[in-house]
Amino acid sequence: MAKHNAFYAQSGGVTAVINASACGVIEACRRHADRIGHVYAGHNGIIGALTEDLIDTNQESDEAIAALRHTPGGAFGSCRYKLKSIESHRAEYERLIEVFKAHDIRYFFYNGGGDSADTCLKVSQLSEKMGYPLTAIHVPKTVDNDLPITDNSPGFGSVAKYVATSTREAALDIESMCATSTKVFIFEVMGRHAGWIAAAGALAGESAEQAPHVIIFPEIAFDRAAVMARIDEAVKRHGFCVIVISEGAQYADGTFLADAGSTDAFGHKQLGGVAPTLAGMVKADLGYKYHWAVADYLQRAARHIASRTDVEQAYAVGKAAVELALDGQNAMMPAIKRVSESPYEWQIEAAPLAEIANHEKFMPRDYISEDGLYISEAGRRYLAPLIQGEDFPPFENGLPKVAKLEKARVARKLPDFTV
Image (cartoon, rainbow, N blue to C red):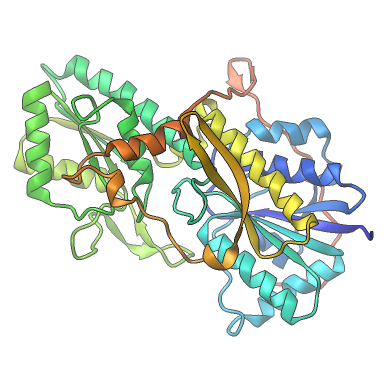
């Protein structure tokens, strides 16, 4: 069978384990060197393909590729760049095919979230229309955990572990000082439309009797009076109140509590500052002394406290993507299927991209408590296995070691292209 090259790229916000997926893809390709020649990584995601800025991962040592498994961030560079419709931006798609032809690329592995699934599907459709044989497989990744079909998304488990850990640690800090100092602590986490990350904060305690006492989800319309009453009750009962809130918390009319008034490259509303917004309400309505914190990039970069389950799943979907491609499957995504809850067991199954692209998975209502301000037992049963196990990176001089890549560039063969 003829040998051809593969293209791999990372897209969107990175995670603590996205490079574990890269490791899974590259190591699987190396094991099938009889069918896959070079693995070219796009520098800065799909932009690397459009501009023919390719990294030859074959020039990296086995040790460097293995080290990706414990390295956070996007090792090859990521991007927020969504390909528009084929009809309106045909030149971009044709450019992709030209680059793939020039470098004999027949396998396309795109590692990202929902928008990346859409890009992968479009590339697959275009290659078919243009008669160029290309197998396109989406490698799932998103801290938001909002990809459909898959039980969970690689990247989420580690963020969930970080948020639960940080919530527990911060709660102990607040509790120790609440008699004479801060009464309310607000922890803002990611989650534009789906409250999975905020929900994970509840794992810091065994019930709402322990911190966090309040969880605010995008899926539940924000009711200021109800939230303030719950905070006041917690302070009077426990001496303090810890709140975990999604950045995408919104009112009943869909307005975000913290709409920054601009949009990102994907057309999503820019959010920021829901924690200080809520803190302002606490001050105005209750008068309690407060502190707030925003997890921001820290939550998705914290490889030192990654979930072992998450690391293993991230690697597995990368490996499975290559196996699906070599099996002749196209426009598919390796999805995680929960086989058993106790003990927790999972396996990888193929899912069609047509059922994943441009679809979001929200928190099921039965995962949220009846009053909408905490998780249910069903939610806890779903979340708890995803943060299990530790997979500490090696340390050197007191700090985590990370992969050091050569990032040797592939010689360009085509005219320049501007994105």
